[in-house]
Length: 211
Image (cartoon, rainbow, N blue to C red; front, side, top):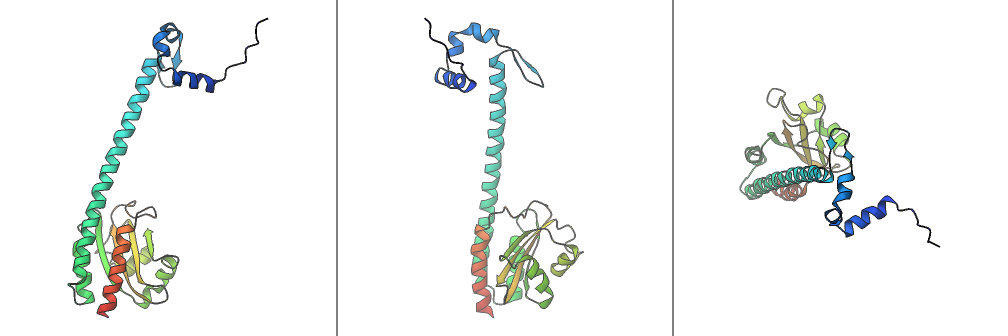
């Protein structure tokens, strides 16, 4: 009496083919009998299907590599700029001189159209409470009224995203370091703040020393 065969599910088939990658080479008649069809195009055999998948994976890898290389170059540029600013901190002897040096240096970064170190004034209180009360930085977009608190409309007309960093704390703010970009996605909550956070710490120390 023959044993009753249990049904084979798709997972078992996949596992078997993975363990025996030469299966179709030894059993080409099975491959010839397969009819694989995609929704967008007919695929006459498994080889064409595999070639298509390999091309898609290759394209994805190239895109990932290009993105990684671009981010690495951008991070290196940002690191160099903030290193330069670190050295300038101790060469400036006044708030206004420091503000000008920072603007001249950091605006060299692509898509940064403005950089301002602004001393705290009472007119900034509402924006600080709204944007910087939870943490000492805000990256994103501002309202038109908030924009005018930082920059003249004619001098920075095309700011599509901003970065704000509070110098001091919410209770006793000393200044705001503000950046504007002409790209909407340049400053977002997903940005890595490692370099700028280190710089902000040094900037706070220098402003305390200049006070």
